[in-house]
Image (tube, rainbow, N blue to C red):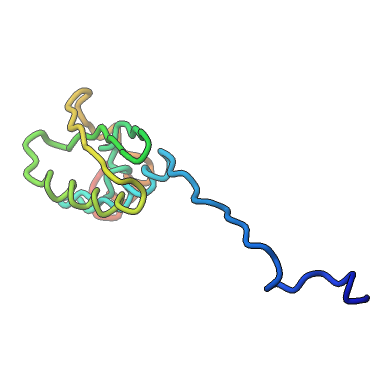
Length: 122
């Protein structure tokens, strides 16, 4: 093979900008699995506390509930949410919603399995 027909060396290849992949609602939902209910030790997605996720450009809005309206730990969940989403969006807001009320029927199969492992009967 002559020098004229040899493939270019890696250093001679042009750089290709693949761009940043846009954040999706699925990305946000997956990141919320890092947010753990401080009382139960299970993530808020598998507990069924995340009702909806909206994405408008670089701002996320989450419709969430708590296992109890009197839960004193909303600040902890908000702080964990900030940490979970900070690399994905510029800003976020949590809409705390109470309808429909949370119940054990909202827990995912994975959440039920985790609760059983902790000794809960679900």
